[in-house]
Amino acid sequence: MSEESGLTYSVYDTDHMTPTEIYGHVLAKLGEERKEIVALTADLAKSTKIGKFGDKHPERFFNVGIAEQNLMGIASGLALAGFIPFVSTFAVFAALRAGEQVRTDICYQNLNCKIIATHSGLSFGTAGTTHHCTEDLAVMRSFANMTVIVPADGFETANAVRACVDHPGPVYMRIGRGFEQTVYENENYGFQIGKAVKMHEGSDITVIACGPCVLQAVEAARTIKESQGIEVRVINMHTIKPLDREAIIEAVNDTRKIITVENHSIIGGLGSAVAEVITEEGKSCRLKRLGIPDIFAIVGQTDDLYNLYKIDAEGIIEAIGEMLGKEVEEDDDWEDEV
Image (cartoon, rainbow, N blue to C red; front, side, top):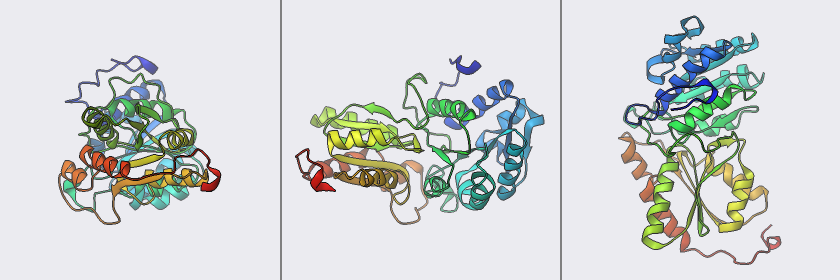
């Protein structure tokens, strides 16, 4: 049960309450307290669960039909009128079909719009390439003024939805289809936009993950510690922009070996963001990016696709083994590394 911010709900029966369900419940409750919150959908109220807000607050709920560009334009107008629009559609439609409107109508004017994109990455694996979205982090983090959040589970989704209400400017929040497992035991772990969470202690190697890959990284760290005694640090980088640079540099200094894992293309997402920080800081380390390679993913069940593209626990363990077989310079003098 949660009483924070006036929210009272039994969302942590994880067999029934998925991140998308939790999002819908939390937003509906927030709507009781914050009359400036409005919600918009492009004919996907049921699938994205934003319809729960509509059930409670029909006078502040708008279905624009299958017209995602208009969806973003209307949201920008409502924001200019002083409302806080929450917009939900599938990630592939929010980031790609309506990308221009997000950039020009919302980000260019730095408007207070919150885009909650569902069915991201390969979470809708059986729907095929047209409904996969493995490019959205690259797109959204390139837009000026945009904050990008990727919750790891339902607990973090609840925290992120609450936090983004009072976070100024546009926010893009990326969640899955709704079958993601729970990582945290509860929501009381100190969520803060832009501040990563250390999920597992370790000094041999660091795995930086986001979204559903956080659970896979934690499971991999526990398994490899029990079987081989290897200490793997796991960092949940739930905010892709602004990135927690301090956590990354600390991990580089402490472990000198970094693996990033994401349900996204290896181009432009979490791995690229981490690599940028390391390079800009003049640090040298071993870096491996796990994600979708430079291809369009095949059709399949989500778990099978995670395994195929090695972003599950098994793939992470394999990458750790490969990484630990490589040597890095042991001295602490970074000057010769720049």
